[in-house]
Length: 115
Image (cartoon, rainbow, N blue to C red; front, side, top):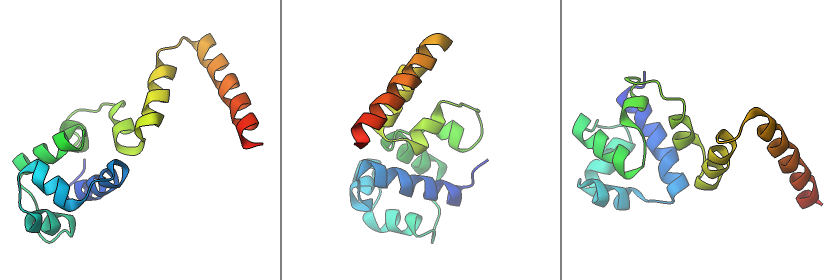
């Protein structure tokens, strides 16, 4: 289970992926820029309500982050970019035979594009 301070590391990574500043996040969450900076520097901890709003803005599953619900699909929200998540979603919709073909095609395309 993540602590509030672990959560801030996850948020920092997500902010980078979303190309959003602390000031922009603070405005969307409804807190001051100073408060957001204090959270991100781990000087103070946001309330659970504020953490929930941050999750909503950053499109993260609050329950997964804090270990309340184990949701494997939420991992993609934390570590994958939007286009990567799209590929994973397409892959998961396939049966086993189609998945093998998908991988073959992706590997072939990858080798062609690297030339």
